[in-house]
Length: 432
Image (tube, rainbow, N blue to C red; front, side, top):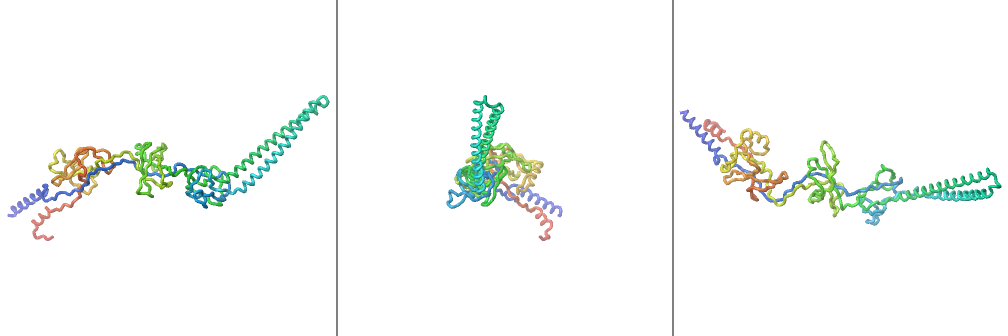
């Protein structure tokens, strides 16, 4: 009797297991998450960061030593002096140094020049007198001794030399006076170009020095309506960059606005930082409304390729693979059920939330899966084009716009109803 009962139990269990594994049995139809296929624009771009800079900057420094007495008037703001963001024209006064020492030096050199001119006049008179004495001695050669004639000639030569020295001292005094006058002019610091003051580095009363290493007093940007963006592009992407290439970028100050520019230079001198090689790329940018300010950080996209109004499929759908049981029986023809080795490899690579314990079907070529009439999935083979890593262009295949493609099937807990059934039969008195 016990043997007959055991056989009946085993038969019942086998039937339940077979029914549960058969499509449409106790197992509920799988649930799939889908996304629609839509038309849109696809942009393939190289990303980089850069800095917005003026097209040209000019450092204005001092050419003489002195202290800042005042700043020049701001032509656009009556009653105000030149300061940050002041617009200046070439020749406008930026600052005035204390000129009293230089005026005194000019007066001194001019006085020395007058003295030198007087010395030249006196030396000229002596030279002329000595020249007349020489001519007279030539006329009286028969009545004067040779020694007297030679003495007169020597006096003439000395007078000429004295005149030459006086003229040299006069020229030296004239140069000194000219330099003193130039230095006096240097006490007025003027704008060398039209532009905007983007930095003022001195204050009234501050002493400035001159020289090659002297710091600048003002930093002028020639024209903020034309700007540059200096970008650092990774060596892996520099091959996709070319002169004239369109660039779009954003700055944090105007996050909802996209600015455009064009590549004007690709610098050959690479930079190496933390074992990363980058190349400098210069982008020309129009800034007619003046919203871009110097040294803003720009997040750039170098346009490599663009497709407009194309059919786009999510890359998730191209990566997803169903299990053999998830494929509709009517679509299994032509598909190869994967081996255990492939299954293990898929389990290592798969990071989805699906149950990885079952083999995954691999289709030939780019394939997406759509839900069939029986609730399972069927494959659709595609021809694909460009991809931005998120969406891929569909160039061919039987896939319509707005079609729903499967991107994954959420993992579902599997109740061990068979073991529970057996336990209830074999241990009817056991309580849960």
